[in-house]
Image (cartoon, one colour):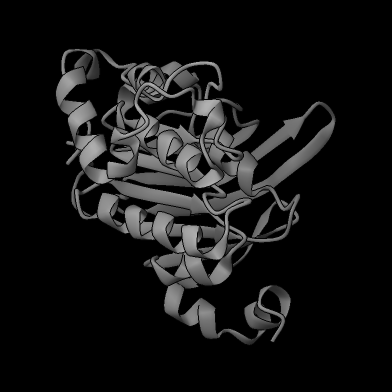
Length: 249
């Protein structure tokens, strides 16, 4: 399976990822209001919340696509608040965006090859490709097929595999179940658990609360650009507010 990136490890007790009081704006519109959260090495952490709550913006800040306006972003113990997206990829952060965003007129093989962005990955493309096909055997039958002709579930597999080609230490997954049939959602989350077994840390944004928290160690409820609640995944699944707001119970 994919070997995580080789960046300097944080000292014991220091989270792999930490956001402290992070704010963010789109023009004059404030999207994040002092977000603080952390992800420890080896964890799966899920962010839940309604549309427009700020979850995707959190991932964009982490991956360097949206510089924070205030607060601090630390990765492996280092301040990366002003590191651009390509620098975050080089440090070991890979972002699988909402809606998959595969390159539709490129083949599956070409899509995966583009994921090998980092210098360490470019020298291992063949091995990395073999690892992704072992993880997603269905893609082995589709390597020469245009990605835009795949089913939604297959495109999600391509998107995740492309993210893994960069040999990340931290994988950001934005709505991996979006638009997928329940059976395919189950399969995708099984694959996510397999990825976790390789030692890759994950932060997931997911509206399917049961699926997301069901494979997670911890979770955060994000509302109106702020963290409303933080707890273990098990506790969040039984929390009365979470059950009423997101499970309709």
